[in-house]
Length: 532
Image (cartoon, rainbow, N blue to C red):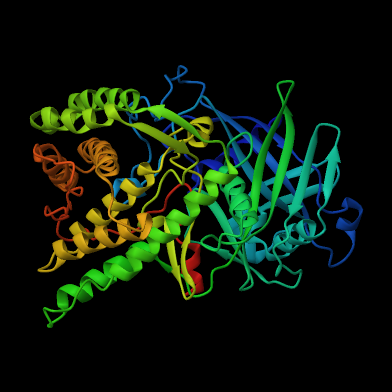
C-alpha cells in the first residue's frame, strides 16, 4: 500500500479520482482505503539517468463510501426491474445510457508515470506529489496522457512481459493478430468517460479500464472468441493486460486494458442512421425508398453471424417460456408502480407475455446491450463494438446465456428512437423499412409465428424498461417508448400468421434536444470518430 499513510497524498489521489469523468461515485462521500502498486514496467535504476523515460506502473485504488449503509443489490437481472440508476446525464435512447450500480467498495485503476520534476505539458494530468521508496521525491502523472509512458506500456505488451512482486503481478498477453509495432505514436482520445482510450498511430487503440470488475473482462473474452472464429464483424484484438494484487489478505484479479484494431473510415451507426433520416425527409423524390434499408439488412446479417459464433464458443441452454413470461410479467407490475402510465396497457401486455408460455427458449451468450450506438460502419462493412453488456448488471448476469431476441429487440427499439429523433414526412416509413430489412438480414426469411411471438414479448419488455427510464429521468420523452407499449398492448388480434408490428415512435423528442450517442460506460463515446 502506498500513499494512504500520508493524508495529504491520499487527499491528492482521491481528488484526482473523484474529479475524473470516469469516476462513478459522484455525489457520494468517498474515501481512499488503499492504493496498491503493481510491479514497475521500467527499471527504477534507469530512472535517474538523463533523458530516461518516466517510471511507469499500474496502481489499484480501493474506494469506499463509509457514510453509506451497504445498499441492497442494485444490479438489473433477468429476474428483476433495474433499481434507480446513477449518473444519468446521457442523451439519446435509454438503451444507449449506462450507469453502474452503487457499491460499498470500488476498485479504480491508475496508470501512473512518475517524473522527477514538473512537466509543463502534463500539468493537467498531475495526480500527486509523493516521496517514493524506490524513486525519491517524484510527481505522479496519469500515464495515459503521457506519450512516453504509453510507449513503455506498448513495449511491455509487445514483449509479452510477466512482471512480479511479492504481492502483485502484471501480465501482458498478445494474440495472433498482426499489425502492432513499437513505432506507433500514442495519442490520447479525449472524448471518453468511463474508460480511457489512447490511439496508437493509425493501427490500434489502447483501452484502459478505469472502474475495474474482478475477473475476466467480457469485452476481451468475446473479442478473443470471435477473432478465433474468424468473424470479421468485430475489431481485431491485439492483446490485453491483466493484474493481480492482494487486498485484505485476498488475491484479486482483473483485466486492466485491451488493445484493439483501429477501424479506418468508421462511422458511428447512430450518426449514420440519423443522417439517413435527415436526407430521406429532405428528398424531393417521393419514390425514393429508405436509404438505410440496405445497411439495416447488412447489420442484421452481421448480428446473425456474431450470434452463431458466440453460440459455438460459449455455453448454451434452454429455458421454459413460462418462466421467462412470469419474469416479464413481474417486471411489468413493478414498472407500473413507478410509471402509472403503463397501467392501462397491462392487460394487453400480459397477453403479449403469455404467448411465451408455449415456447422453449434457446439461450446463449449475447452482446447484451445492442443498439445503433454499439455499431460502426466501415468501408468493409459493419463492426459491432462493446461486448461488456449492460453495466447495471453484475458480471455473472452479463455472462449468463439469454435469448437472441434480447439483442434483436434492442436494435429494433433503437430504430424507433432514431425515428423519433428526426421527425419528418418519411420517418415512419424509414423505421418500418429498417425494421423489415434488419429482420430479413438476421433471419434470412420471414419470421415464423413462434419467432414473431417471442420477439414481440422481448420488444414489449424492452419498451417497458424504457418507459421506466424516461419516467425517472426524462419525463418529456416518455411518449416515445409509451407509444410502442400502447401499440403492442393494443394488438390483441395478433394472429399466428402476422409478422410483429412495425412500431415507430410517432411521439417526437423535445424540440432543441436532438438525440446523440452519450458518453457511456462500456465504450468511449466514439474513439473511432478519430478514424473518420
